Image 1 (tube, rainbow, N blue to C red):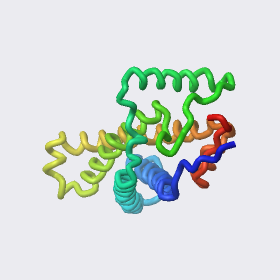
Image 2 (cartoon, rainbow, N blue to C red; image 1 turned 90 degrees about the horizontal axis):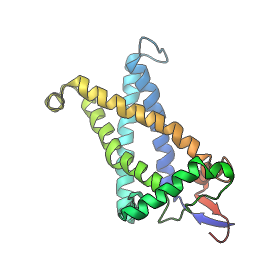
Image 3 (tube, helix red, strand yellow; image 1 turned 60 degrees about the horizontal axis):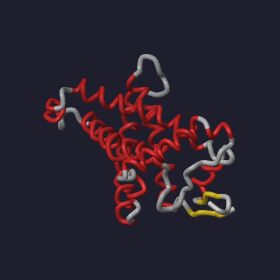
Length: 208
């Protein structure tokens, strides 16, 4: 087996801290939204913790952007600009997830430090990190201080519109976490990819 150092320490630290923030945000966000149904903590406590986790997420997003820009690794998120090749490789990956995986076929994508994500992951992570995450952060900041950002909220359609967008994006992220965890179990063993996010190393059969 070839051991590939795929996840540097800063990326692993960012990943797990990001996951922790999202978990806290989902729990406290649900408590805020459904305070008449859930009773895990007081409303004020939920708001305070949600704000702390939210601004922690903002800080982590900035760290992510600076790290990938400074190291020149941002390209791992960028889909192939050769449309024909991208579509062809995406089809191979989709076929693997929907059919080949269950027949014991090898994964058509072999990760390297400069090509970590398969075509389907690239478009998913690109959409998340360059569009949905900024929308989540922006709407969250607006809702954090309604008085200070009243003008911007009005321009965007009012508090109901901003709140609805924030909630919809949060629901997407909640659903994505389940899909993400499932996909991490699709290695040669169920824990292979999860282990790699602790050690940094992925293993590939020789010859790939």
